[in-house]
Amino acid sequence: MNVLVVGPHPDDQELGMGGSIARLVADGHRVHLLDMTNGEPTPHGTPEIRAREAARAAEILGVTRECLHLPNREVVHSIEARHAVAGVIRRHRIEVMFVPHPEDAHPDHRAVTRIAEDARFDAKLTKTDLPGEPTYPKWLFHYWCTHLRIVPSPSFLIDTTGFAERKLEAILAYESQFVANPRNRHVPEWINAAGVYFGSRLGTASAEPFFSREPLGLTGLSGLA
Image 1 (cartoon, one colour):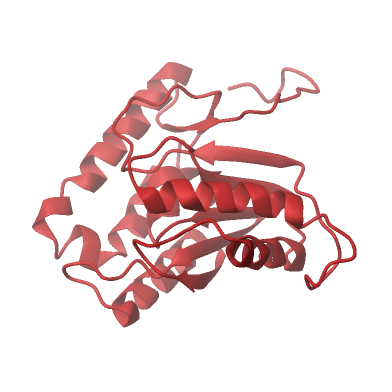
Image 2 (tube, helix red, strand yellow):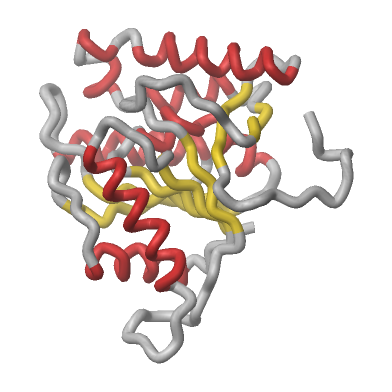
């Protein structure tokens, strides 16, 4: 399947669902990461540094990646932003989307979620100036970003056993954020702890939580962890 993971800033996808991304790639799916902003300014980063870090993280996870370069800290829901994301959906013939959970402490994250959800609708429209053929992703799931301080109450968990180390490697590719910045050096540790906790709910080594507003269907019990 063609999978799109939308992130407000470079590193949000890795932090929220890096293990699941690695597993999807290993399972043969084509995964594309869309950064809505370049993530700058930050205390120890520059646009050039963040671009190199994002490219390195994508290489580690085995995915493709692009950035729309919306203004960091000032992302707003607009027709232009919706159509830009819809164009990505159509160009990559996306079948499954992952976007941030709509409840979040960061205004950029909330705006990005609304943009992406509406872009899913826009991508299917005919008689429009959007490039490419109409496309409608059948599934849209939400992952949790690190700015959310409530405890996630997921609809389902993805078993990420065997992929936690690759997730950590992808996170640490962002040296400006999680190595150079002493305030964030603890983040990989508690991200890993969360993965172990959610894995314990399945009886696995690690897992990541997801939310779905729409019902999920099962063709059988063989896929249950």
